[in-house]
Amino acid sequence: MSVGERVSDPVGVSEVVSITRDLIRIDTSNYGGGRAVGESRAADLVERLLGEVGIVCERFEAEPGRTNLVARWPGRDRTLPGLLLHGHLDVVPVDAAAWTVDPFGGEIADGMLWGRGAVDMKNMVAMIVASVRRMVTAGEQPERDVVLAFFADEEAGCVLGSQWMVEHHPEQFAGVRDAISEGGGYSVTLGERADTRAYLLNTGEKGVLWLRLTAHGAAGHASLASQDSAIVKLAAAVGRIGALDWPVSFTETTTHLFQRLRELTGASSELSPFELAALVGPSASRLRAGLQNVANVTMISGGYKENVIPESATATVDARFLPGQRDEVIARIREAAGEGVDVEVQLELIAMESPNDGELVSVIEAVIERHDPGATVLPHLIPGGTDAKALSRLGITGYGFIPLRLPADFDFPGMFHGVDERVPLDALDFGCAVLTDIIRSV
Image 1 (spheres, rainbow, N blue to C red):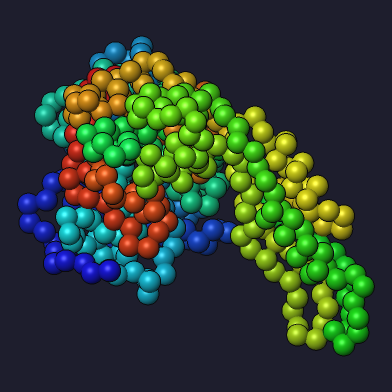
Image 2 (cartoon, helix red, strand yellow):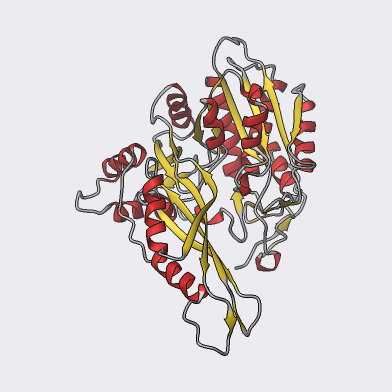
C-alpha cells in the first residue's frame, strides 16, 4: 500500500488527536505471560494531563511498572449512582517489519493517525482525558460522580489490571452503577444506502476459555515404530476440535440486533443470519462471531530432539463461548479431544450481557441523534473480552462505546491487533464531542 504525505508533528491538530498520538508514541506492549514493557509511562502522561485541570489520580500496581490509574471527578449530586469511564493502557505487540510506518511513531498521513493503539484503545483513553479537560476548563461539573480508570494488562487477561483492582481495591468503584469503555461505538453503513448509518453499542461479550491440551504417550527412539505417540494423539485431537460444527444460537442481544437489521435494511426474511450480517460491510465478521461458539487451536508444542519420540505434546485452544453456554463448550472440546488427552483450563473470563435499554442507553441514543441525525444505535455482542467482565463482579453494568463516525468502506474491525492500525482524525474529533455530550447528559 502507499501512504501519502506524512506529518510527524502536525500543527493545529485537536487535543484528542494530540493526546492519542502522544500515547501511541509510548510503547506499552504486553507480550503475555508476565512479559510486558509496562504501562507506567503512559500512566504518567494521563496523570499529568488530568492533574493540570485539578483531577487527582491514585496509582495502584500489582507489580512494578504495571500501573493502574484511578481518579474520581465529583458530581453535583453525589447521591446519584456514579458513571465509570475506563480504558486500558497496554497494547498487543507488533512485527514492525510488516508495517508501512513506525508502529510507535504516531504518524499522521492520509487524514489518519497511525500506530499501535490508535484503535485498541489509546483512542478512547485520549477521548476520556480530552473530554474531562474540556469540561473542567469550561467550568463544567458532571451531574453525578464520574470515576476515571486506566488499567494495565487487559491484553493478557486483565490479571494485573481490572481483575486485581476489583479484588484488592473495590472501594475505588464505590457507588458506580454503569460503565463505558471499549468494544463498540463505531459506525457501520447498512446495505448499499450510504445514508443509513448505525452505531454498534457493545451490550454483550462472549466468554473466554484458554485451554491447554496435553497428550501423553510412550517415549522412545525415533528409529523404531511407535504404537503410542503423544504427537499423533495430539494431532488427531486438534483435527477433531478444528472440525467441530458449532450451531447458530441467539442471545437477547443478537436477537434484538438481527431483528433491527431486518427492519432497517428491509431484508428478506429468507436471508440467513450470516447473509444478513453481510449488509454491515467490513464488520460482518464481528456480527457473525456473535452467533455461535468458536474454538481455535492457536499453539502446538511437542518434541525436543529430531530422533526422540516425546512422552508428551501440548496445544492451546482459545474458545469463545456465548452467554450461558460455558459448560456445553468445555464438554464438547473434551469429547473431541478424546482419550489420552487432558484438557485443562488455563484462563477463564465470563460471558456477559447488559440490558439493551435503560437510562444510559437512552442517553447514548439521544446524543448520537444530536451529532449524527438519522443514525441509530444497535446492540452488539462482541467476540472478544474487555475489562467490563471483571468490573461486573462489583455489580457494574458495562457498555462498550468508543464513538467513531467512519467511512462506509473502512475496515475498522481489521484494525484491532492488525498491521498498520489507524483511525481517521475526524473520527477522533467526533468521538470526543460525543463522549463529552454523554458526560454532560447522564
